[in-house]
Length: 336
Image 1: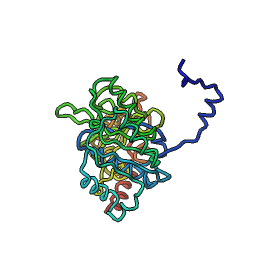
Image 2: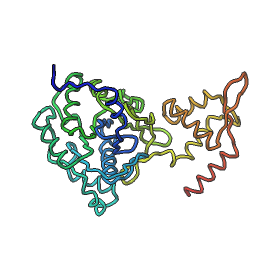
Image 3: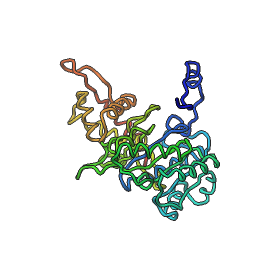
Image 4: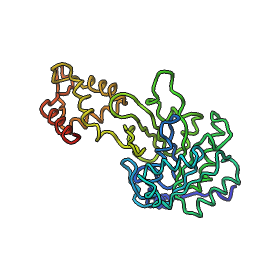
């Protein structure tokens, strides 16, 4: 029998369950997690990854998730020339003078490809990571890290395991590509299953985040989640500012969202069927049903609409015109 095969009793399992959490981003990325950040070429994967890295290195914030303590971060840059990568980082921290404060943010710029299945390379990376007490490793990008067939489940499972070993079992983010969407369509509905390659890439990761570009009203990006151990939203609608940082659009686009809700009440009608409002929001906001239901809940909380029983006991919503107009006025005053 294998000498390394051990069996835990229930006391050991209770002790394991009571171990403290070690969060890099509170409620999103924990010590040891394998995370995939996927997106189409030029969708902003590297910008989002560097934004996460800067947040973890500074004890800052990425979207609504906080890094309560600064941690050492290593970014393996296989894609961009150092000059271009540096310019992006300077933009994200609002000036070169601020970038000098991130001394615990290390970047590997000297490679353009590597073979993560090479045992010596695995050991070398892991040794450096542990020596420098790196807590988050970012690998950019998966396609440049191996020579295996990405559609081979067994081969890609081995690649994913090798990345864990090379990361010294520390939390790590792997940048990966989405498949091209069908001609003439967007990639916003593809989610994690739209990732290029074998299903084992998805199956091995603890968290998948897929970044999509979108058109239509409001947000220019959509970030979707598939998580094994944490509760995440299904989708966040995002935009990007002049400093190349992503932010959630809901708070910034309250007036546009309200206009979208109001358009569901055609003509001078003050009521509409619940299913009609749901379908309208899914179409105009380009979101899935769960996100549209969340918008309806938020609209009720803001006092824009209220629910009631209509004809034939149909569930419907009433538009609260006075409150809605006042909300638009308030938003206009704040943004003028």
